[in-house]
Amino acid sequence: MIADRARFRHAKKLERLAGYRLPELAFSGTMLEALCSRLNYDALDFGVRDRILAFFDEFLRCNCKDSPLCGCPEKKFAQKVIELRKNGLDHRQIAAFMLDEYGIEIFPADVLSFLEESVHVLEAISDVARLQGRAELAKKTDDEIRLIER
Ligand SMILES: [Zn+2]
Image 1 (cartoon, protein in one colour):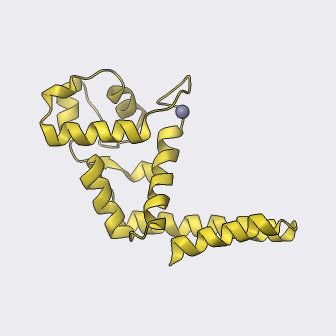
Image 2 (spheres, protein in one colour; image 1 turned 45 degrees about the vertical axis):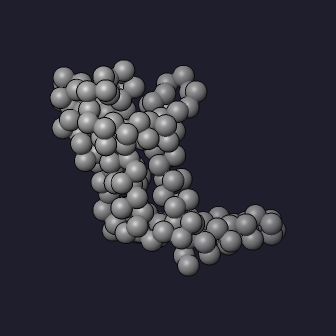
Protein backbone atom coordinates (compact mmCIF):
# COMPACT_ATOMS: atom_id res chain seq x y z
CA MET A 1 0.00 0.00 0.00
CA ILE A 2 1.36 3.36 -1.04
CA ALA A 3 -0.32 5.04 1.94
CA ASP A 4 1.88 2.99 4.28
CA ARG A 5 4.86 4.89 2.89
CA ALA A 6 3.52 8.36 3.65
CA ARG A 7 4.96 10.20 6.64
CA PHE A 8 3.98 13.53 8.11
CA ARG A 9 6.83 16.02 8.05
CA HIS A 10 5.36 17.72 11.13
CA ALA A 11 4.48 14.59 13.08
CA LYS A 12 6.41 15.90 16.11
CA LYS A 13 4.26 19.04 16.22
CA LEU A 14 1.11 16.94 16.06
CA GLU A 15 2.49 14.74 18.80
CA ARG A 16 3.03 17.75 21.07
CA LEU A 17 -0.49 18.89 20.30
CA ALA A 18 -2.00 15.50 21.08
CA GLY A 19 0.08 15.01 24.20
CA TYR A 20 0.85 11.37 23.48
CA ARG A 21 3.17 9.46 21.20
CA LEU A 22 2.27 9.48 17.53
CA PRO A 23 3.94 7.56 14.74
CA GLU A 24 5.29 9.47 11.76
CA LEU A 25 3.17 7.41 9.39
CA ALA A 26 0.36 9.63 8.15
CA PHE A 27 -2.11 6.79 7.63
CA SER A 28 -1.44 4.77 10.77
CA GLY A 29 -4.59 4.18 12.79
CA THR A 30 -3.20 6.09 15.77
CA MET A 31 -2.42 9.12 13.64
CA LEU A 32 -5.78 9.11 11.84
CA GLU A 33 -7.65 8.86 15.12
CA ALA A 34 -5.57 11.65 16.64
CA LEU A 35 -6.36 13.88 13.66
CA CYS A 36 -10.07 13.23 14.14
CA SER A 37 -10.00 13.87 17.87
CA ARG A 38 -10.48 17.64 17.73
CA LEU A 39 -6.91 18.63 18.32
CA ASN A 40 -6.45 22.34 18.83
CA TYR A 41 -5.20 23.02 15.33
CA ASP A 42 -5.13 26.76 15.95
CA ALA A 43 -2.05 26.19 18.11
CA LEU A 44 -0.12 25.14 14.99
CA ASP A 45 1.62 27.67 12.84
CA PHE A 46 -0.33 28.70 9.80
CA GLY A 47 1.52 26.68 7.15
CA VAL A 48 1.34 23.46 9.13
CA ARG A 49 -2.32 23.92 10.04
CA ASP A 50 -3.21 24.63 6.44
CA ARG A 51 -1.63 21.39 5.26
CA ILE A 52 -3.16 19.27 8.00
CA LEU A 53 -6.61 20.68 7.21
CA ALA A 54 -6.05 20.07 3.50
CA PHE A 55 -5.09 16.47 4.36
CA PHE A 56 -8.23 16.16 6.46
CA ASP A 57 -10.49 17.50 3.71
CA GLU A 58 -8.96 15.37 1.01
CA PHE A 59 -8.61 12.02 2.74
CA LEU A 60 -10.62 11.89 5.96
CA ARG A 61 -14.09 12.87 4.88
CA CYS A 62 -16.32 9.84 4.51
CA ASN A 63 -19.49 8.68 6.19
CA CYS A 64 -18.43 5.18 7.15
CA LYS A 65 -19.36 4.14 10.65
CA ASP A 66 -15.80 3.16 11.51
CA SER A 67 -14.20 6.21 9.89
CA PRO A 68 -11.28 7.00 9.89
CA LEU A 69 -10.34 3.32 10.25
CA CYS A 70 -12.54 2.22 7.35
CA GLY A 71 -9.81 2.04 4.72
CA CYS A 72 -11.16 5.02 2.74
CA PRO A 73 -8.26 7.36 3.62
CA GLU A 74 -5.66 4.91 2.26
CA LYS A 75 -7.73 4.27 -0.88
CA LYS A 76 -8.23 7.98 -1.48
CA PHE A 77 -4.52 8.56 -1.16
CA ALA A 78 -3.73 5.87 -3.75
CA GLN A 79 -6.38 7.37 -6.05
CA LYS A 80 -4.88 10.82 -5.59
CA VAL A 81 -1.46 9.57 -6.70
CA ILE A 82 -2.98 8.00 -9.83
CA GLU A 83 -5.00 11.14 -10.51
CA LEU A 84 -1.89 13.34 -10.31
CA ARG A 85 -0.05 11.00 -12.65
CA LYS A 86 -2.93 11.15 -15.14
CA ASN A 87 -2.72 14.94 -14.93
CA GLY A 88 0.83 14.65 -16.19
CA LEU A 89 2.95 14.86 -13.02
CA ASP A 90 5.89 12.46 -12.81
CA HIS A 91 6.82 10.56 -9.63
CA ARG A 92 9.13 13.35 -8.41
CA GLN A 93 6.50 16.01 -8.99
CA ILE A 94 3.90 13.88 -7.23
CA ALA A 95 6.16 13.55 -4.17
CA ALA A 96 6.76 17.33 -4.21
CA PHE A 97 3.02 17.98 -4.51
CA MET A 98 2.24 15.77 -1.50
CA LEU A 99 4.76 17.65 0.62
CA ASP A 100 3.64 21.07 -0.51
CA GLU A 101 -0.08 20.39 -0.29
CA TYR A 102 -0.41 18.07 2.72
CA GLY A 103 2.96 18.07 4.48
CA ILE A 104 3.37 14.42 3.48
CA GLU A 105 6.81 13.04 2.79
CA ILE A 106 6.98 10.16 0.38
CA PHE A 107 9.96 8.89 -1.61
CA PRO A 108 9.66 9.42 -5.38
CA ALA A 109 10.94 5.83 -5.78
CA ASP A 110 7.95 4.58 -3.76
CA VAL A 111 5.60 6.58 -5.96
CA LEU A 112 7.25 5.13 -9.04
CA SER A 113 6.99 1.51 -7.91
CA PHE A 114 3.36 2.06 -6.90
CA LEU A 115 2.58 3.41 -10.39
CA GLU A 116 4.32 0.43 -11.97
CA GLU A 117 2.37 -2.00 -9.79
CA SER A 118 -0.86 -0.22 -10.71
CA VAL A 119 -0.08 -0.68 -14.39
CA HIS A 120 0.51 -4.40 -13.81
CA VAL A 121 -2.82 -4.73 -12.03
CA LEU A 122 -4.57 -2.87 -14.85
CA GLU A 123 -2.87 -5.06 -17.45
CA ALA A 124 -4.18 -8.14 -15.67
CA ILE A 125 -7.68 -6.63 -15.59
CA SER A 126 -7.44 -5.83 -19.27
CA ASP A 127 -6.33 -9.39 -20.13
CA VAL A 128 -9.17 -10.95 -18.17
CA ALA A 129 -11.68 -8.53 -19.68
CA ARG A 130 -10.49 -9.44 -23.17
CA LEU A 131 -10.72 -13.18 -22.41
CA GLN A 132 -14.26 -12.65 -21.20
CA GLY A 133 -15.14 -10.73 -24.33
CA ARG A 134 -15.69 -7.49 -22.43
CA ALA A 135 -14.14 -5.28 -25.07
CA GLU A 136 -15.37 -2.03 -23.59
CA LEU A 137 -13.84 -2.67 -20.18
CA ALA A 138 -10.61 -3.82 -21.85
CA LYS A 139 -10.44 -0.62 -23.87
CA LYS A 140 -11.20 1.56 -20.88
CA THR A 141 -8.46 -0.17 -18.91
CA ASP A 142 -5.98 0.19 -21.77
CA ASP A 143 -6.73 3.92 -21.93
CA GLU A 144 -6.06 4.16 -18.21
CA ILE A 145 -2.73 2.32 -18.63
CA ARG A 146 -1.71 4.68 -21.40
CA LEU A 147 -2.41 7.72 -19.21
CA ILE A 148 -0.26 6.33 -16.38
CA GLU A 149 2.58 5.15 -18.59
CA ARG A 150 3.06 8.08 -20.93
ZN1 LIG B 1 -14.81 5.35 4.90
